[in-house]
Amino acid sequence: MKTKLLASANGSDDKKKLKAYYIEHRLIFDNIVKILEEERKILMNQSESTKRYENPSWAYQQADFIGSKRTYDKVIDLLTIDPIEEKHD
Image (cartoon, rainbow, N blue to C red; front, top):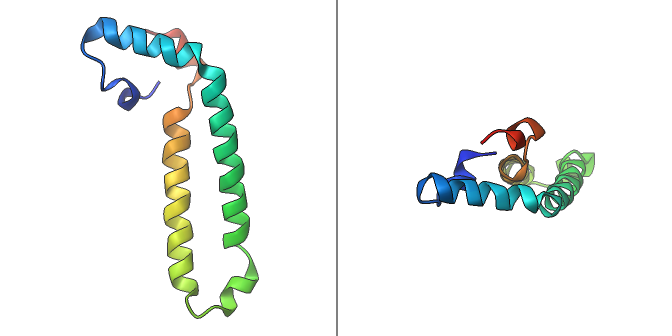
């Protein structure tokens, strides 16, 4: 579990409760991650299209794709609960 997810908790009891909440609702988070991964895959397919080279703003579009990919990666990483982490307090 990512520390950032538990940063808003005050004290160890709140952290345990918050962690338990995330684990209890893991199915929801897993579904969100799956959706984000599918959207990321679509984005990557679009960014790799050779038709994009014809656009004079290609470099700006690539920069935008890279920034979007980075955002998807961060959110996916944040919401992913590792089964090993799930077992630890």
